[in-house]
Structures are given as structure tokens and as C-alpha cells.
Amino acid sequence: MSRKTIKTDPPEFPLRLSLEDRELFKAAWKNARANHGNTFTFYLPGMIRYGKIRGQYPAISLTGNRCDLKCEHCKGMLLEPMLKAESPGHLIEISKRLAEKGAKGILLTGGSDFRGKLPWKKYGKAVERIKLETDLFMSAHTGFPDRESCEVLEQAGVKQALTDVMGDEQTATRVYHLAGLKQVFDSLEEIKKSGLEFVPHIVAGLWYGKISAEYEALKIISGYRPKALVIVVLTPLKGTPMEGVIPPSPLEIARLIATARLMMPKVPISLGCERPRDKQGWIMEKLAIRAGATRMAVWSEEAINEAEDLGLTPRFQPTCCSLTFRKSFSSSGP
Image 1 (cartoon, rainbow, N blue to C red):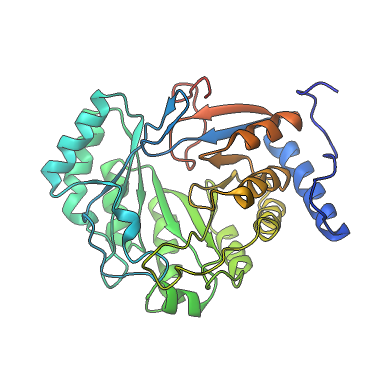
Image 2 (tube, rainbow, N blue to C red):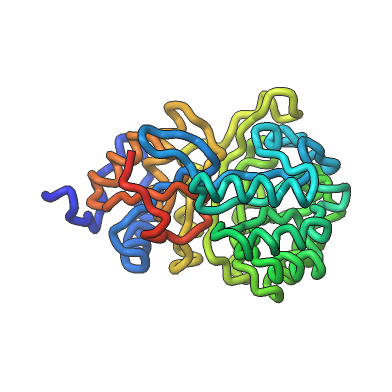
């Protein structure tokens, strides 16, 4: 069989799967092919280098390393490797420099205050100037924004709102330190009204490695017309309360992806950049492809080989996996 012949029923995976799992993945695979064709897009975000490809979509923190919310799984540590904008003027300066160096876009992010908010109003005019004076595509990891923040972002030229969605009160309050799940719903309503593209993220395993309310999060997301869905996996960080937690297994993640695929047939689904990078991670990547994912950030050679062996055509884009594939953004491959 030709490597480019799509396999309607993928061959058995070299991992013992129950009949129920095999049927779930088979249904998700067929759904993905019917709605998304035979391509699979691999993304390289930030400024990560992989072979000959370098990411051209850096993240910029508007709060430096500061985060008041201090979620249990992060404690602000994910901000440390990001570029830092110390003022609106500095943000403009950084962005113009990145544009001159060939960046395709930027992810605006930062730490949250105690209410889960980022300083969007302070940076709104700077973002508007970046839109007017560069060709950068801009997305924002919004935190949990109110109406004014969403309006500021949309009017300034930001295209996408990336936000975490959890499915129960205990995760919202005891992991994210929010006032409650209502705060999440309120933010989703404001994003929906604003016209920003909604790209929700689910952090699988947030309840100390257990798959708890992720399926409820899928139900919530399905009601808000997502542009794409990104599923990332808890990565235990040293120095956080989850340092010793065991992340969900590849099989658990694949089940979540397959369920999402059947629930939201036309929505692109990505296995995002935060996830284990070991042998279990390679298995997770392969299963994700079979379970109906259509995108993957920061791939392995094993994932490319798996996609090709299943008859899919890999394509590469050096941006965040929230973005739709564009020929003008694409890369020839590693």
C-alpha cells in the first residue's frame, strides 16, 4: 500500500487496546478523515529550533516573571523562558525587532492578578500600534477576561483568545485559585461576544494527574464555537505542589482526544506543546494521530513516521498550533 493511501481502518497499534478503545479510535479516525482530509500539521511555536526549522511565533510576557494567581501546577514558572515586555513602549520595540527578523506572529501572555486578569487595558494602544506597523499575527493567552479586556484586544487587532477551560469547581478554585467556575463561564461569554477567535486549552491531568472533569470541560467548550481546541498534558514542574505527580497515560489522553473529535467533528484538535517528552510521550503522539487529532506542536520523528505510515501528508508551520495552516507561514519540513 502506498504511504499516501489513507488507511480507513488503521492497523493495530503495538499496545494492547481493549475492544472499546479500538472502536473509539476507529470512529474518531474516520471522522477526522471525513472532516479534515489527509493532511496533518506539525507546529513549532516560540523560538524553538528543530532540525532546520526554527519557531517564528515567540511568547511575550507582559508581567515579566510576576504572577499573583500562582496556580498549583505552574506557580509562574512557565513565564521564565519568555521574552519580557516591561512597558507598552518596550512591547512595541520587541515586536518590531521580531518582525524585522522574520517572525510570523507573537503570543501575548503573562501572569494573572489575583482575579485571573492580565493588564490588557494598559497595553491596548501598544498592541494597536504593532498591528498598524507590522504584519505580525497576534494571539493572546487571555487569562479570564472581562468585557472591557475582550473589547480592547479585539479593537487592537488581536485575532485569537487562548484560555484554559476546566470542568469543575475544585479545579477552578483549588488549582487555578479562581473564585469559581462561574468566572470561567463569564469569560467565555465575553470572548464569544467580542468576535475574537476562541481557542480553548484543556490541561489534562490538572487534578494532580487524574482525569477528573476534562470531559465536562469538552461539553462546556462545545457550546462556544471554538476555532480550534488544544489539549496539553500536565507537566510536573520542580518546585510546584505537583512536582511528583504522574501525568495521565497516553491512552487516557487519546481517549480524551477521540471523544473531543466525535463531539466536535469539524473543529481542528491539537496535541499542544506542554506534555511529557519521553517514551510515553512518543506513544502519546502516535495515539493522538489515530484518535483524531489534526495538529501537533513540537513533534518527534516517531510522530512524523506514524502520520506518513497511516497515509497522511505532513506539513509544517513555525507558529503556535492555534493558527490555521497558511502557505505563507509554512515551512518545508525538518
